[in-house]
Every structure is written in C-alpha cells, then in structure tokens.
Length: 139
Image 1 (cartoon, rainbow, N blue to C red):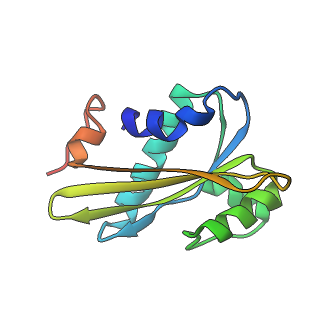
Image 2: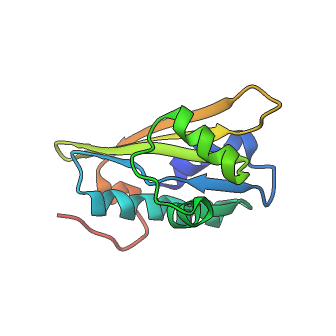
C-alpha cells in the first residue's frame, strides 16, 4: 500500500498543506463496503506519508451540500475539485479477479490556469500485501 502511495504522489510530494480530495473508488467485482474500506485505508496512508490536507468523500459531499455518487471519470472529478477549491483530487477503482485485487488510482492536478496534469498508478496484489503491517487478514 505504501508503495502505491509513494509512486502516485512522489511527483508532487514537496508541496505542503494543499488540499487533496479523495473520492470513493469504483468497486468492480468487489463488495462496496470493501472498496470503501480500501479507499479509507488509502486516505489514511496518504495522510501518514504526506503533508496534504485530506478531504474525504463525506467532507466533499458536505461542501457541495449534496451527495455525489458514481463520479469515476476525470471530467466529473475536475468539476468537483474546481467547485470546492481543491488543488488535487484522486479517483480510481478497486477490482478483483480471482484472488488478485487491483487498485487503479488517478491523481489529478486541478488548476484553472494550467493544463490538467494527472499521475496514474496501477497496483495488483493479493489483499494481504496491501496491508502487510496492518494485522488485516482476508480469507
């Protein structure tokens, strides 16, 4: 999990206290509760290794005064980020094929004056490797 975070956020890790929004990841062949748990775990790990101010889905909904559901594409994410003043937003998906989980995360730089930039990482593993030191075990 830490490898995913370091690879995804390394290009801009030097900036501090910028707001990073994380939308709930799309669940593909995965229980939505598990997808939300993995999204929350990603948020926690990012918070541990960076100086970003993490803005989770619930806070994004509060700021927008409504509930956003199924925002998994870049255009939707950029619109949300711009409307609430985020500098970055992360969207992605969590999928399961056999016993292999795949996390596809896409971090988008939001700035009206600069062309949109994005950093993308895909990590495939069994779930236990994502939480190597977390005492989490799935059967």
